[in-house]
Image 1 (tube, rainbow, N blue to C red):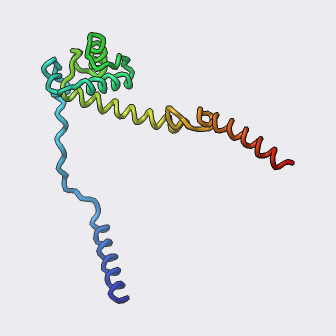
Image 2: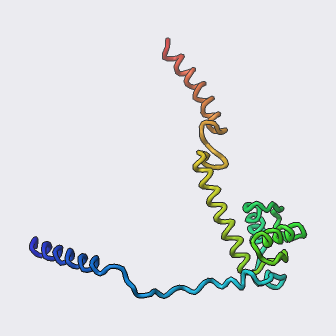
Image 3: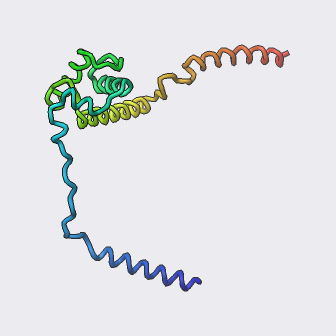
Length: 163
């Protein structure tokens, strides 16, 4: 059995040596076609926005995403004039025609950017040492209550044993 394992190990070593000697391939690889950016830069209209099928919840997600990206808007699930103006500012900053309406590609770019901003914001909070919005550390409300209870119980119990 040991001889078989030794033989297989030697074959593996010779096989990997042959692969290492082969070097880099000079054969050109098939490249992927670039993403179709025509959809992202096409002018967005009310019809293109209707194709997305935005429910009230999805509209709120878009509004939250815009806010996360620095374009403050009211999160109410309605695309009123102020939200349309914010969408137009976002489009203008990204080089899209500023229509105030979204098309499918722009919606994807917006939601992806908002998700990335959310992740990086979470990472920054973690690096800063803050765990979450409602921390349960010693300085939080639960910690304060626990510390007060501990002090009272410790004083009462400690007094019993001092006698």
